Structure formats: structure tokens, C-alpha cells
Length: 227
Length: 256
View (cartoon, rainbow over the protein chains, first blue to last red):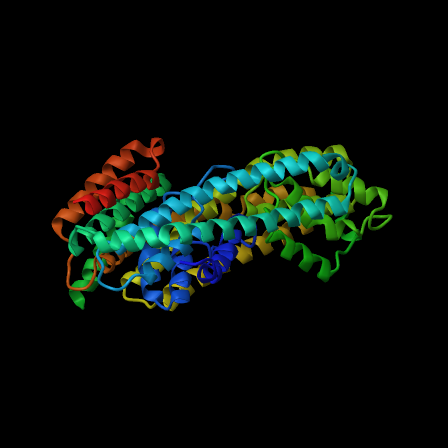
């Protein structure tokens, strides 16, 4: 993928990366949204949605609590969705390879957020006296430049992700040795385990949570039998 | 001057709107030194222009500096602090009292917001979207439902926080006893568990693909994995394990 081809995807990744923390945190950066939008950009929203769902299940494990470090799913969702949607249909290796690329992007992008926060802290240290004197200009500059840097950070991560992983995913999909069924099965098992573990971590303190879960399962079974 | 005399200074609607819009960007300069502090100053700035002396007057500058120091809260509930601190500044409350109030408010706003939004509302909305996907929903239906549902809660919570802060000033602490904030996570968690029982099998079935069923092997492997991960609890990050396992699987499938 050339730089020019990656540009619209980079722009999408930049906007959705900005949503993660800086503005407006409307969760358009959740992978189920980001990957679907990226897939739509490529012309295959269904493919984007498929990988978005798998990423969303995995992303349930990393909720953005306070100052904790977490993977950045906005840019990663865009990279994963665009990569998977760009592969020809019926290639068993496309989903696992695109998923791996998205997870690596999420990890790298999470690290880039840490770097950005350190950069903002350094810039704050330099202007601390001015801000302590109540300078409106210094405060606005620090704040707006922080948001601009975040936008650029997400654009850079998305561009690099697309340029590095696009040929890799294509190559992996071509030489993939496993059959389609086991490839999907491994992805589903991984997503199910992470999502199940994450939901237990989050909701285990809710009273009678397992009964509520079983109630949902029963309702689904009854619905399927009735239909 | 007491905080109860808050009706003296009416904040114009356009200033409230400016504060609300800025509230959406409250974490724009989040950093490891002041955390959200500079963002709080950024959001309050339009209202502080109403202080005696106006923009860049001594009171404005002192208040802006004070409000841009270290602070942390959940971003969606930061409006509670922004509103209350704005009211206190405009009412001329003693700066020492404002500092004490800032320190006391940060912790509860963080933990209440984390439990209500990140640990309840967000996973609940994700699960609803996953269930719509599992039921055969189109990309527009899945994404549209998620964004609409999530953001009704999101934008209302931000607006409520700002409004309650502005109206109650330093007496805002009692607002944190609101039933939605106190019992919301429990109710949303129960609802999320029910939705999870529907969403997970449906969504996973659709990912597996048409013409295939969730075979016994997949279900057993997933259940064993979930039990192991649940036992590890806080000591393991599931997504990192997923990354490792997936990398090994990709390598295996390429090399064989």
C-alpha cells in the first residue's frame, strides 16, 4: 500500500484515535465501530464488522480506567478493518493475520499514548510559570497543541500500521497452511476466552451474576426453539 | 460569601454551551504531571471571564492558575467538578476552601464514574451491539445502535454533571448519592449479564460462519479458557495472552 492509498485510512484513524481520550470520547473509537467504518472505506463494511466484532470481544478486557495503560483501539480498529476488508473473500488466513496486525497496532498505539502524555508533561513543565501566572494563551496553547499532537500521533500510527502490515497480511494470507474451519475456530475460541474472562472480571461482584447469565442463555435457547 | 448565595451571578447560556463543548475535550492535555488539571482550567475559562476585572484581570488570572493544577476525575463526571468550582470561583469563595474542595472531590468522581461508565455502561452497550450482530444485524444497525445507545447515556451524564455542579456549587457532594450513580452499576451489571447470555453465543456463531455450528470442541475449549482466565483474575491481561496465542498460531500456519 502506497502512502497516497493509506491517506484516507490514516485520516479516519487519526479522528478515531483522537476520540479515545482527547475528544469527544463518544466511543466511535471502539473497534466494533472503527473496523466497520474502515471496512466501509474499502467498500466492504460487512468484513469490517466481522473483524470489529472479534476485536470488540477482546477489547472488553481493556477498559480505560483512570491513568492505567491500555491498548488504543481506535487506530487499531481502523487498521484491522481496512486490512481484512482489503483481502479477497475465502482466504482462511486473512482474519487471523489481520487480527494479529490489529492487536500489534493497538499495543504500539497504546505505547504512543504514553509517550504523548510524557511530551505534554514536558511542555507543561516548560510553561508552568506562565500558567501559574494565569496566562490564558499558555493554557489554551498547551491544551490545543496536546489535542493536535494526539491527532498526529493516531494518524502516524495508522499510516505506519497500514504500510507495514498490508503486505505482511497479504503474504500470510497467500501462504496460509491451515484450513478455513480451524482458522475461524481458533479466532472464535480466543475471542470467547478473552471476552468471558473480561466480563467475569468486570461483573463478578454483581449479585447473582451467573444466574442472570444463565437466564440470558435460557431465553436465547427458548427463542431458538420457538423459531 | 457563602456558596448558598450562588444565584447572584447568572451564567449566560452561551457560556454554559461553550463550557459543555469544551467539556468534551477535557482530557486534551492529559499528562502524568497534572493529569486532567489543565483540562479543568480549559473548560472553566469562558465562565471565569465573568469575574470582576474580566478577561486577564487579577481575579481571572488567579482563578485560572488555581483551576489548572493537578486534578483527576472520570471525564464524564468532570462536569460536576467544573460546575461546582466555577460556581465557587464566581461566588468569591475563599481560595483555600476551593483547594480543599478540589482535593476532596477528585477521588469520588473518579471511582463513581469508572464503576458506572467503564465497568457497566460501556460493556453493556457493547454486548447489546454484539447481540444485534449475532441476530444478523447489518453494519449500520450494529454500529448505529451502539453509538446511539451509548451516547444517550454519555451526553446526558456530562450535561447533568455540569448542571448539577453549577446549581449546587460546593454543596454538590450530595449529588453523588444519586440513585443512578449509587445503584446504577448493580442494575446495569445484572442487565449486561442477561444480554451476555444472549449475545456471546449468537455473535460467536456468526463469526464462525454460515453452515458451521459452534462445535463441542470450541465450546469446551472456550469454557476451560474462561475458567483459567477468571482464576488468574487481575494477574493476567487476556488481550496480551490473545496476542501471544494468535502470533504462535499464525507462525504455525505459515510455517507448516
